[in-house]
Every structure is written in C-alpha cells, then in structure tokens.
Amino acid sequence: MTSQTHRFPRFFVTVATPCPYLPGREERKLFTELKGGDAVELNDILTHYGFRRSQNVAYRPACDNCSACQSVRIRVKDFELKRWARKALKANSDLVADVIDPWVTDEQFDLLKTYLGARHGDGGMAGMDAYDYTLMVEDTPVETTLTEYRMAGEDGTASDLIAVCLTDRLSDGLSMVYSFYNPELQGRSLGTFMILEHVARARRMGLDYVYLGYMVSNCRKMSYKARFQPLEVLGPDGWRIAKA
Image (cartoon, rainbow, N blue to C red; front, side, top):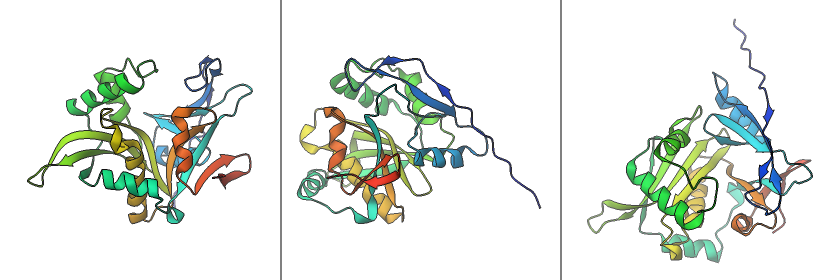
C-alpha cells in the first residue's frame, strides 16, 4: 500500500498595476504555479475558490479595498434558452464546432490579432506575438482543448475560421479560459454563441457548470455574463445564485 503526498502550493502576490477594467484603480493578483502530478487536482480546487488559469499559473485578484471582480459559473442543468439565446443560436446555425488538441496554427493567430486590434487595441494582450500565443495555448499542465468554429461550406465541409475558444476540462465543468472571434461579424453574437455551445457540450458530458471567469461590477465589457441565468457567484459564503 502506498500513500500519495501532495505539494502544498506557494502563493505570491504581484506588484500593483493599472486595473484593466476600472479606470483609476490598481490591481494585484495572488498566484501559484501549477506543476507536477497534482496540477490537475490543484487547478480543480483553486478554480472552486475563484482562481483562473493562465498557462501553468493559477491566479485570482487580490486588490486593496476592492472586490469588484466576482467569479461566476453557469448552472448547466437549470439553464433555459431565452429569446436572446435562441436568436444567437439561429444566427450561427451554419457553424461547425471542431474540438481539437491545444495546438497553434497561423490561421488562429491571424484571427487573434484581428480581434485584439478591433476590440482590445489598448489592452495588455495587444502586443502579443506568435510565441506568446503559443505559450498561452500549448503551455498547459491540465486537460485543455481548442474549439475552432467554422462556417460550413456549400459542399458540407467547414471553411473559414471565425472563432476560437481555449477550454479546460474540470471535474465538474468546463472552464472557458479565453475566446476570440472575427470582429466584423457583429450580428452573429459570436461571444454569446460560444458560451451557449459550451453549455450544451457540458450538458452532453454530464457536467454541472460552465466557468466564465470574472464578472466585474460597473464594467460594460464584462456585464454580458449576467444574462446567463441561473448564474452562480462566488462570495464569502461560497457559491450562490446571482440576482437576475
């Protein structure tokens, strides 16, 4: 009989930097490395405590006098399609979702640069190069996939790449790490569609949640997450249903 020992993670705090969500504020992050044989289990545990993964690091906000960032997850079994959701699904009924191993292509990177230039030109990722993107996708110590969304061609084959999502598989759900899409196709609501597709996928897989990362109070770019009810928010007393 053998006993398994687990590494107790060492946590660190970053220096203060300008907050990317709320003007005039600063952010700090608490983080630890994900490595070794217990990386999958540690990532699972930390996600339940509001952490997010970036490459081989798990982090969460640790800002002074601010708790605007709230971890949120969709309760899959209770999610019902409202009119806005059905509209997004109909607008993208011609898309094919292909779940693949986390492997970078030039086509993905070109789409990412187009997306960042149009939607986040002044953000921290604006200067990302091909090497940075490769690390973001391929440097993962946990079970990770990429989903490529393409238009179906007239002959039934998939053609143009229009959206991509990097996703982690957790013990109880899917965690949407990062997604991007063709910014010129605004009428499709591609961001909404990718979340809906993940909800449907999690349901087929028998998983309970889709983790969406942080919802930030008073930040317009992050407010869209509130419509995916029932939405659970992590607070001092654990996960609770958010007010609609």
